[in-house]
Image (cartoon, rainbow, N blue to C red; front, side, top):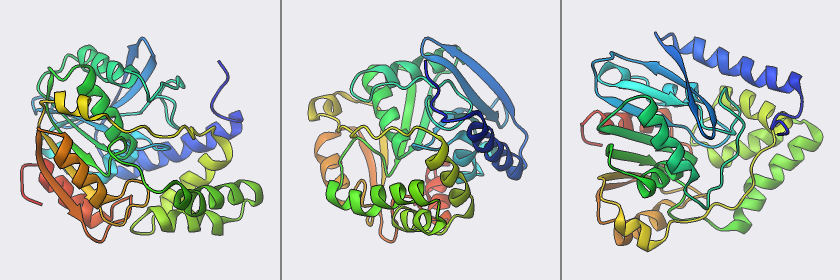
Length: 287
């Protein structure tokens, strides 16, 4: 299988930033490698082993340290398992799964079985939300509840807007290597400026083969079959997955929707203050 990294040097630079971010978190953690039928999955584990389990699933072109930074206080009350999603710029296998079949759901269920977990909470952002919904479709028997932040797979935004706001600046950066194009991209996606994101995504855009497959949306039939309680946090100014459109559809198709909230001042990637509000929600407090 051809590597998703365009060069060994590029891979080294990306994983160097991964290690930098993990070190900056200043947390006690262990690495755990889980062998699945889809390839080795790297998991960062933190928090008291006696606490209830929560699995974190990051977004596309991301990694587990970013998910841990997003919700920094969960380890006080949970045993946190932050997954490096397959075929992303991180330390898991480079096996690219299909978004159209059951592969992602089967993968997460296998991880849960291998880790010997029960009554698991799943929390995911963006593409991580798609993976969580796929997990519920495949087998939700070991899932207690889920938290989805600006998730993929419920609605999609205007593809023309996406081309002009995301794809063209990205391609211009890849051609010119001028940071202003990364900044332009991130300004549309991130609510707040993120210096690490500028560094990390600059390397990813140049050195990693990203997946540009169109994101599917869940069918009403599959959504109706899900029984696990869902808490959905949508972002009003999210061009990729528009928040108001998302909440409207979610209320129609998910009988197990426990709560739906709209972040009124948020773009796709939430601000630090909004992420802390979401964390409070996961910890059992009101948004």
